[in-house]
Length: 141
Image: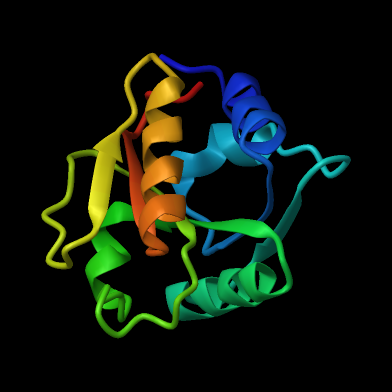
């Protein structure tokens, strides 16, 4: 298990992510409860495509950005590495089980080691494409 406070400190302070958006999901409750507006911005969205658009706009403005999304809804996004608008956002996803992602996106499952996140961020910066960090509900407390 990973503490939500440690998760945010790692992503925001070590990896310099500052902008987050997403549609509220119950599996993210520990993350929502531990958000710190002193070093991060979270904008709730009405749907996943809006969250993605907000994060893409933050990226264009020079910020590392991420969306928080129910893993079962990732396939609803129009995320194709060949047609995506060069907005390499971090997709943080959760679900009870690991989803079957139809897109050819890089996905890593969070274990108890936060360095897994660094692998996902490295793929984002190296290939300039969105990538997915997945965790199972209840894994972040």
